[in-house]
Length: 427
Ligand SMILES: Nc1nc2c(ncn2[C@@H]2O[C@H](COP(=O)(O)OP(=O)(O)OP(=O)(O)O)[C@@H](O)[C@H]2O)c(=O)[nH]1
Ligand SMILES: [Mg+2]
Image 1 (cartoon, rainbow, N blue to C red):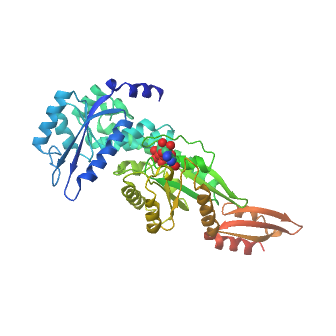
Image 2: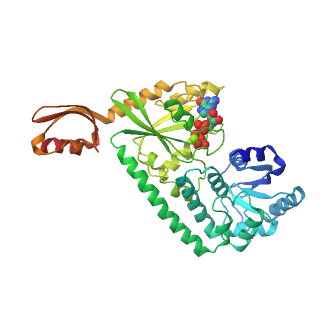
């Protein structure tokens, strides 16, 4: 990372890139400009120097060059005059479009998906994150694997070629497929391990922090627990999941998890690969949706997160909406408006520790509602029934006499029937 900082300081060493967006039927210029501002942040995160932005208004993309022939010629002139190294398109390009544009301009062409994959590769530090990113990248590259692409990537290097790197690009499709199969196996093994760890935590209420990238999830995680997750003002600072215990009352400990952020047009290969990382959210009892209230486009971000939750089939889970960064908000009327729209939402500043008690109280309330505490007595003579309770209940207190063990247990209401069966069997 240190090395990267010095590179970023010297913009002459950075790849010079241009961004291209399109206002298609039904879109407003404002909307597309906002998407391009985000693309610029992504490009900068990836270490590029964004020199210029091109926007074309067209009902639909051109099948050959994405933009029209006149526009691509204009762009090409600019590339030659300004010594541009890289073009980044905001929309997904077909492999044929990439080929055509690369052939015409002679420089590297990537789209938003490729760029996001690149940043993921850059930020993947854990074994699991690395495997997942490589898997997504190979699936993305596979249909785009042409001699042209390989040649250019090998020559130019840099953005769009991190991660699996040159060796994979030089190999043929068969080898890439074999590598994909290998990685899938590897991921399964890693998944199996985390599965075991998860089972050991059974019985605790689980809350997961989710939301758009840079919303402040990790900051909130650190404020609520002693997690020490790294926080950065850049996109996709967090790529793996951290889970910490949070004691909310003497009888209630919940597990809080922080995970990878979402973004508009999150590549579906990434969503598929990151199922393991997202499993904490997928299996959580509560999703804490963190929103950056100071972002000019927070509504859009809210919607994007909702869509991804749908894609992950977890949109029906219990959700707690949390508007973050209120300390930076200038327009305080916005809070009043949002309170009407979202009466259950909380307004906080994770960085300034404002409103944290409200969150804790709310999580406690939801966790308590899901659990039941009761006394149960089990007969020793009928065998050892106690261990059957371990996976589905927490033992809060235990006393015994010659015949019985008396347990105070706490359990998820979903497990009530099983608990009753055990109680009946060991009467
Ligand atoms: N002013 C202000 N800034 C905040 C607050 N919470 C987080 N930030 C800043 O927002 C930026 C992103 O914070 P993170 O906690 O890394 O965000 P994240 O949601 O984990 O982001 P990813 O892991 O990239 O998805 C950092 O620069 C934080 O310092 C807040 O309450 N107020
Ligand atoms: Mg984070």
